[in-house]
Amino acid sequence: MPVSVEPTSAQPMPAEPASVGPTPAEAASVGRASVDPNRSGAVAGAEVLRPHAENAFAAELAALAAQDDRPRPTRWKLSPWAVATYLLGGTLPDGTVITPKYVGPRRIVEVAVTTLATDRALLLLGVPGTAKTWVSEHLAAAVSGDSTLLVQGTAGTPEEAIRYGWNYARLLAHGPSRDALVPSPVMRAMAEGMTARVEELTRIPADVQDTLITILSEKTLPIPELGQEVQAVRGFNVIATANDRDRGVNDLSSALRRRFNTVVLPLPETAEAEVEIVSRRVDQIGRSLDLPSAPDGIDEIRRVVTVFRELRDGLTSDGRTKVKSPSGTLSTAEAISVVTNGLALAAHFGDGVLRPGDVAAGILGAVVRDPAADRVIWQEYLETVVREREGWKDFYRACREVSA
Image (cartoon, rainbow, N blue to C red; front, side):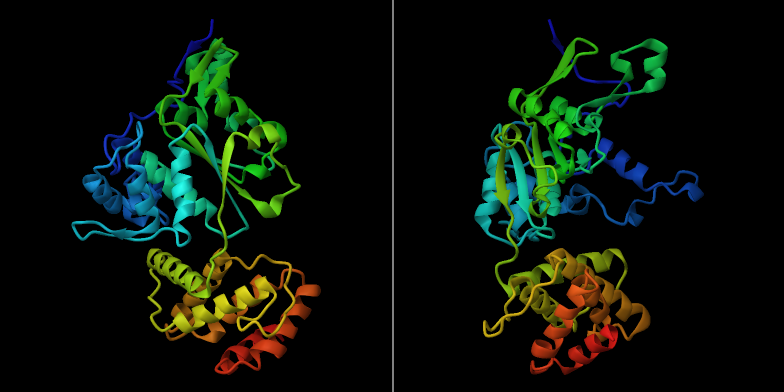
């Protein structure tokens, strides 16, 4: 008769956090990630390049928790309403401003949050650069207070990454035992009633993907070597992300797809929405890299977004001219990368003001993925669209210079 077991010893599980702010276990995790070997183990938490969402936005999460008087599902740190507010932004009754983490249709976020409150897992689907990973991380941070229970999907992801592994020294010395068991992030989430994340699910081989079927349908993870099992406690769920450009790589089986509620994250609906997203993320990244703010760079951000949207849509913004689309995705994430790189150029090799020459090379690299076909498409776009656009002469010259 199988008995329920929580894996221990090989990888101790932290106690359930008592509040939205960082718990001792989370603080220890951050400390381990930021130890400077040249400082005798001293913690340099302020130097973490990219803090986890629950740490970077701890103040906002704490403010929401303090004023959140709505019902919370078991083991959730916030109510579904507060989780949606954390994602979409807003102003609390005490005047605390919650910054938006996702700019898009509110209904999409509401459906995603509601799914996590049921026994269905959540699949975030979309083209590259639609903030799937970003949304996944912030959902886990708001719901469970911990976004680090993560399985990164690749072509080489083994079954052990989803189920469990073994401490082979203990396994060889003492045979299969609880002490020799090394729990996966999914197993830990099941035992603690938390949210696990699986990134790039369709990159994982099909036979490994199907490891999730029993976990999601029966809420149980058998450990046949011990004649035991781990049963999920209330609060457990899974958020997976998948790139719809990867169709045909490792498509989900119909059995696995049925276990997910799929939410499609669209590209930004309007140019202004995309400009806002790019501006906000560039500002956040720039602060973490100690780059100067770019108050005068909004014109260049609009140009980058306009170029990407027109080439992506195959049509100019005024709807008058059809253009050819290159092979790349030209996503919002790539626009953020182009502008961030341009800001670094302006800061270190210019006068600190973002100019056309700072973003031209990045745009060329994003557009021309196929040196033969894409270069022709880019040159044609430059000559027929950019060259004739009023107020874009300096941008045209900069792009021509790097394209020569």
